[in-house]
Length: 148
Image (cartoon, rainbow, N blue to C red; front, side, top):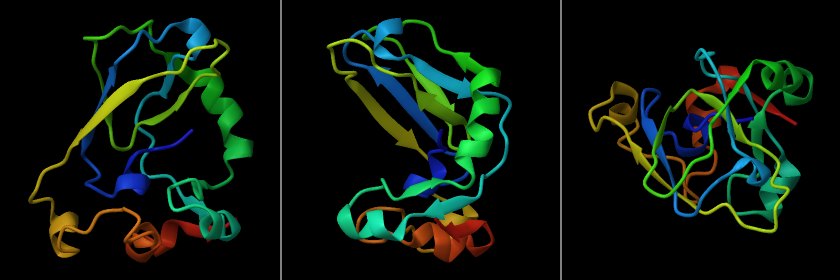
Protein backbone atom coordinates (compact mmCIF):
# COMPACT_ATOMS: atom_id res chain seq x y z
CA UNK A 1 0.00 0.00 0.00
CA UNK A 2 1.18 3.50 -0.73
CA UNK A 3 0.15 7.03 -1.57
CA UNK A 4 1.75 8.83 -4.51
CA UNK A 5 2.38 12.14 -2.74
CA UNK A 6 5.32 11.00 -0.55
CA UNK A 7 7.05 9.61 -3.63
CA UNK A 8 6.60 12.53 -5.96
CA UNK A 9 5.83 15.48 -3.63
CA UNK A 10 4.05 17.23 -6.46
CA UNK A 11 1.00 18.53 -4.58
CA UNK A 12 -1.35 16.91 -2.07
CA UNK A 13 -4.24 17.43 -4.46
CA UNK A 14 -2.38 16.18 -7.55
CA UNK A 15 -3.79 13.42 -9.73
CA UNK A 16 -2.12 10.40 -11.30
CA UNK A 17 -3.46 8.99 -14.55
CA UNK A 18 -2.90 5.20 -14.55
CA UNK A 19 -3.11 3.98 -18.15
CA UNK A 20 -2.56 0.33 -19.16
CA UNK A 21 -0.38 -0.23 -22.20
CA UNK A 22 -1.19 -3.96 -22.15
CA UNK A 23 -4.33 -5.54 -20.67
CA UNK A 24 -4.26 -5.80 -16.87
CA UNK A 25 -6.52 -8.67 -15.88
CA UNK A 26 -7.23 -10.50 -12.64
CA UNK A 27 -4.33 -12.96 -12.89
CA UNK A 28 -1.96 -10.03 -13.43
CA UNK A 29 -2.95 -8.32 -10.20
CA UNK A 30 -5.49 -5.56 -10.55
CA UNK A 31 -5.08 -2.26 -8.78
CA UNK A 32 -6.54 -2.17 -5.25
CA UNK A 33 -7.75 1.20 -3.97
CA UNK A 34 -8.94 2.09 -0.48
CA UNK A 35 -11.71 4.63 -0.24
CA UNK A 36 -12.44 7.17 1.06
CA UNK A 37 -9.25 9.25 1.21
CA UNK A 38 -7.52 8.69 4.53
CA UNK A 39 -5.34 11.80 4.67
CA UNK A 40 -1.57 11.85 4.41
CA UNK A 41 -0.16 8.75 6.10
CA UNK A 42 3.00 8.72 8.26
CA UNK A 43 6.07 7.47 6.40
CA UNK A 44 8.99 5.33 7.57
CA UNK A 45 12.34 5.43 5.78
CA UNK A 46 14.56 2.36 5.62
CA UNK A 47 18.01 3.95 5.80
CA UNK A 48 19.77 0.70 4.81
CA UNK A 49 17.66 0.34 1.67
CA UNK A 50 18.21 4.02 0.92
CA UNK A 51 21.96 3.37 0.74
CA UNK A 52 21.40 0.51 -1.73
CA UNK A 53 18.85 2.03 -4.08
CA UNK A 54 18.53 5.33 -5.88
CA UNK A 55 14.77 5.10 -6.15
CA UNK A 56 11.80 5.12 -3.79
CA UNK A 57 12.08 1.55 -2.41
CA UNK A 58 13.18 2.91 0.96
CA UNK A 59 9.94 4.83 1.56
CA UNK A 60 6.98 3.03 3.12
CA UNK A 61 3.90 3.70 5.17
CA UNK A 62 4.64 3.46 8.88
CA UNK A 63 3.18 0.36 10.58
CA UNK A 64 2.00 -1.01 7.24
CA UNK A 65 2.09 -4.61 8.47
CA UNK A 66 -0.40 -3.77 11.22
CA UNK A 67 -2.65 -1.59 9.05
CA UNK A 68 -2.46 -3.21 5.62
CA UNK A 69 -4.71 -6.18 6.43
CA UNK A 70 -7.61 -3.87 7.26
CA UNK A 71 -7.02 -1.91 4.08
CA UNK A 72 -7.02 -5.19 2.12
CA UNK A 73 -10.51 -5.94 3.47
CA UNK A 74 -11.78 -2.45 2.62
CA UNK A 75 -10.22 -2.25 -0.84
CA UNK A 76 -12.09 -1.64 -4.02
CA UNK A 77 -10.52 -3.75 -6.77
CA UNK A 78 -10.33 -2.17 -10.19
CA UNK A 79 -11.92 -4.13 -13.03
CA UNK A 80 -9.87 -5.61 -15.84
CA UNK A 81 -8.33 -2.69 -17.68
CA UNK A 82 -7.28 -2.46 -21.29
CA UNK A 83 -5.24 -0.11 -23.48
CA UNK A 84 -7.26 3.06 -23.83
CA UNK A 85 -8.72 2.80 -20.30
CA UNK A 86 -7.80 5.37 -17.68
CA UNK A 87 -7.91 5.32 -13.89
CA UNK A 88 -7.44 8.62 -12.06
CA UNK A 89 -6.00 8.51 -8.55
CA UNK A 90 -5.83 11.37 -6.08
CA UNK A 91 -2.30 11.86 -4.68
CA UNK A 92 -3.54 10.72 -1.25
CA UNK A 93 -5.40 7.63 -2.51
CA UNK A 94 -4.14 4.52 -0.75
CA UNK A 95 -3.53 1.92 -3.44
CA UNK A 96 -1.45 -1.10 -4.37
CA UNK A 97 -1.14 -3.59 -7.16
CA UNK A 98 -2.46 -7.07 -6.61
CA UNK A 99 -0.15 -10.07 -6.86
CA UNK A 100 0.85 -10.85 -10.43
CA UNK A 101 0.32 -14.60 -10.86
CA UNK A 102 0.69 -14.55 -14.62
CA UNK A 103 3.77 -14.86 -16.79
CA UNK A 104 3.13 -11.37 -18.20
CA UNK A 105 4.43 -8.03 -17.05
CA UNK A 106 2.02 -5.23 -16.15
CA UNK A 107 2.89 -2.41 -18.49
CA UNK A 108 1.24 0.86 -17.62
CA UNK A 109 1.94 4.51 -18.24
CA UNK A 110 1.46 7.05 -15.50
CA UNK A 111 1.09 10.77 -15.92
CA UNK A 112 0.78 13.19 -13.03
CA UNK A 113 -0.87 16.56 -12.85
CA UNK A 114 -0.51 19.01 -9.99
CA UNK A 115 -1.39 22.69 -9.83
CA UNK A 116 1.71 24.73 -10.60
CA UNK A 117 0.75 27.36 -8.03
CA UNK A 118 0.05 24.98 -5.14
CA UNK A 119 1.14 26.95 -2.04
CA UNK A 120 3.39 24.21 -0.62
CA UNK A 121 4.97 23.45 -4.00
CA UNK A 122 5.58 27.17 -4.54
CA UNK A 123 7.10 27.61 -1.06
CA UNK A 124 9.68 24.89 -1.76
CA UNK A 125 10.39 26.52 -5.14
CA UNK A 126 8.89 23.60 -7.05
CA UNK A 127 11.28 20.97 -5.67
CA UNK A 128 9.74 17.54 -5.98
CA UNK A 129 10.89 14.08 -4.88
CA UNK A 130 13.42 12.80 -7.33
CA UNK A 131 16.84 11.20 -6.87
CA UNK A 132 18.30 14.69 -6.41
CA UNK A 133 16.05 15.38 -3.38
CA UNK A 134 15.57 11.99 -1.68
CA UNK A 135 14.76 13.46 1.75
CA UNK A 136 12.27 16.08 0.64
CA UNK A 137 9.30 14.36 2.33
CA UNK A 138 10.93 14.17 5.77
CA UNK A 139 12.19 17.74 5.40
CA UNK A 140 8.74 19.16 4.66
CA UNK A 141 6.71 16.74 6.83
CA UNK A 142 8.91 15.98 9.88
CA UNK A 143 5.82 15.19 11.96
CA UNK A 144 5.05 12.26 9.64
CA UNK A 145 8.58 10.84 9.39
CA UNK A 146 10.06 7.86 11.25
CA UNK A 147 13.07 5.65 10.57
CA UNK A 148 12.23 1.96 10.05
